[in-house]
Every structure is written in C-alpha cells, then in structure tokens.
Length: 121
Image 1 (tube, helix red, strand yellow):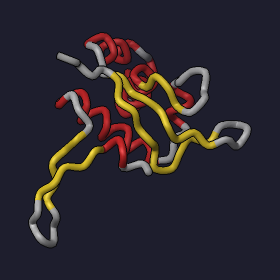
Image 2 (cartoon, helix red, strand yellow):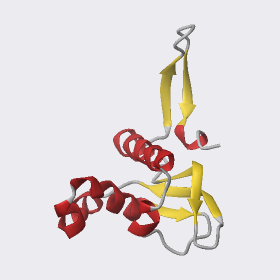
Image 3 (tube, helix red, strand yellow):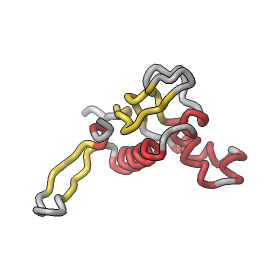
Image 4 (cartoon, helix red, strand yellow):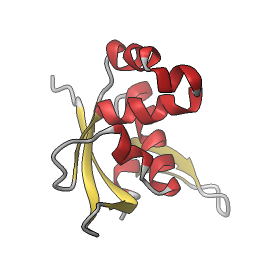
C-alpha cells in the first residue's frame, strides 16, 4: 500500500523573486501536528492570527521553483490568488490526503473529478 505524503502543484500566478524570476512549480507535504502547533508560538501569529497561514505554509511547502528555502517572507510576497490556491490545496491534502475533488457543473449538473494540483496551469 502506497501512502502519498508530498503533492506537486503549479501556482496560478507564480512567485517573483528579487531578480524577476517567476517560480510556479512546487510541492507541499502533508502537515504534522507540530506544523500546526509550532506557529502558535510565533509572536507574529500571537499578535495577528491571520499570520498563521503564512508560517504554516512556509513549513509545509518543500519546493518552489529553484528557491533554496521557503521562508515566511516568500509566502508573504505571493500574489493573493496564489495564497488562496495554496490554502485550498493545504486543506484538501490534509483533510482528505489527496488533491482530487469531486465537482458538479453548474450548467448541466454533471459530476466529475478535478485535480487541484493541475489548476495552476
């Protein structure tokens, strides 16, 4: 039985580094209990609960383009669309352990599966 713990993704917009390079492809691992507990000790999270997602994502994103490390500052500088995408991906893989979700077409009512990891393009 195989158990997937890391999930590939492509950001919709991409992170732009100081040199102007765009980083879109990356991977996110499943979160551990410590990944969710440790950020609560961070003063930035204590003073602003919204910062929790920043520190949490910086812990579980294992690769983004060819960046050497994924820091909270990298996550802070993502476009809002990319942050929303990563939050949805985090919830899906950690609540369900997969990136595929069932959706229903609003026009015809047909149901089909989409892979969130493919939505970034």
